[in-house]
Length: 252
Length: 221
Image 1 (cartoon, each protein chain N blue to C red):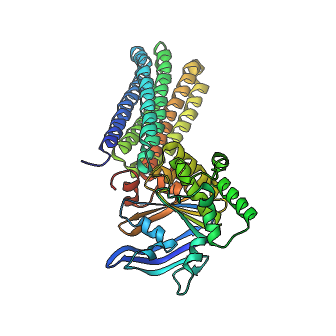
Image 2 (cartoon, each protein chain N blue to C red; image 1 turned 30 degrees about the vertical axis):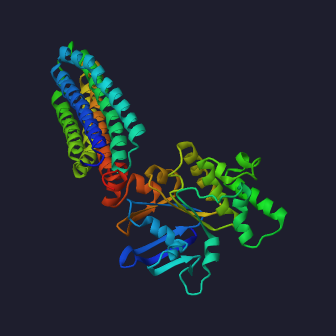
């Protein structure tokens, strides 16, 4: 086992009285891609949002157990959630660019963090767009509206926006589900590149996508972690019957 | 309706195609042994002519599997069933070839005086045929224990072959007139031993399909 970046220990999660996650214990290795799979309502997205405390925004939710980033409990009292989310970035299912220019979308997080130096801003925006494999397509239209980009470009813009603040972990919630196959391919290629610098955790409904992009796969069912193993093992020889039934499409 | 019913039906269809090929290959093996032991040239010729049907089925199953892989992107046990059945059909095709080889020996020996070796060949041929039958039964039933038993019996087939060769050599030393026929009989024994090997390969593929594990390193020295 390599260097553990994120770790969940006996984590339970409640939406009011409903226990959405039960006793989740698993580690996420640094610079690896981990895919979370399972049928709708299994808790995989809820679990993803526990990793950067996005569920805090929903009233009536509660977490028991521990979630650690570099060994530090992210649910500890007094922890600065804004700085946590800077370290753990997130990309959502639907591209959600701000109604601003391409440049301002990427620069936004940097400005919020107090970066004012124009040259440095330009440098970081370019780096981020290159990191998201979008630079060549938008370098001549940095000052046009981001809403004019295609869906696939918008999603890579959102990835660039997440990369700009130099996070350590990147959470992706079905990042390609609204994209066509070519745009999906670009996102998947990008994930392979990004893992050199980031720890990536991705929720996906596409089994083939999980198989293509991830190093490890975790199968969730009814709020529980049923099996987690190397992706190779999970898709050729899963140990658990429920995992096998799900990934061979027998249910779910 | 059962989920993935269409794909499940296609997997069933695949199994039936493999069984159809298995039935042809097994029948060719049985007939070639009979043709050899009884010196039946007509039967031998029938087997040689019939081999193309086995080859055609292999092509048909390959194309079917390729389509399943491309269009249904199977995972886990489904993936292993397809890869395993591809391995099995390769071995079934080779079994057909061994039956043809044995038939060539049968045709040659049919025009010669009978050999004193037949009773010795019978034991090896029975062992090989039983191994083949068990490996196919293991495939039909997904029976890994039976598959393991086939793998273990392969040592017995090897031992019988070596014993046969020694006896043939002794016979040829004492009776030089039978050397030509003896050499053909040695080659035939080798074909029978190969049939046992191919049955073992099929048994190994059954274990791979059912449990995802290779028996190769457990059953063979």
